[in-house]
Length: 253
Image (cartoon, rainbow, N blue to C red; front, side, top):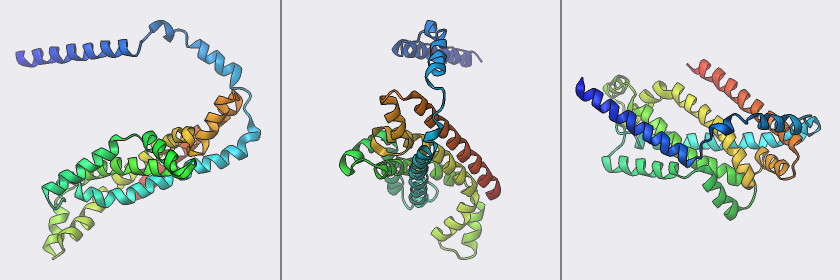
């Protein structure tokens, strides 16, 4: 018990030091926390009344944002699912292949979507296709890692049963593992889909089109009422996707 207490004290001191250094780096100010009424006053004075006449245009832009997020994440899932079998220690053909695929996924995942977006906007031009490719590449790395971990945690019993009836190794893995992990795969997909909607907004601000580009245009022109209307559309969009994802997951499970 003595060594545990000593280790706990060391951990607490280390965390306290990290919190202190982080607070200094971000210029944490408790005085500013009690001045948030300035933000509320700004919202009341500038975000009202909403520009409902912009609703048809904003809905059209929201479809672009939704399409980028949906198609980019779905394409990433289709690519990441077979790759994840190579990135799982229980299904990889060799250790060398396992580490190679894992490293490749980590490399792709380490690059933020906005960096991919900046590269594609410059090389391919402005528009939602650049944002689509950015969402796709980053999500291949994320979903590949998440699904590979689900594969490693899958029960070995069904795999052994497939082998006992003469199934090949790869076919047995596919048909014994995918039914086990599919609900969680869908859960990960819808979570990444929600994240991709918000990512698509940021990518729109750098030229990726959709609601993000409209939001940036309104901000630059000080059209705060229009900006508030776009924010309301974004909030509704994320809530609707979350509800639909919950319904689909319940039906699959």
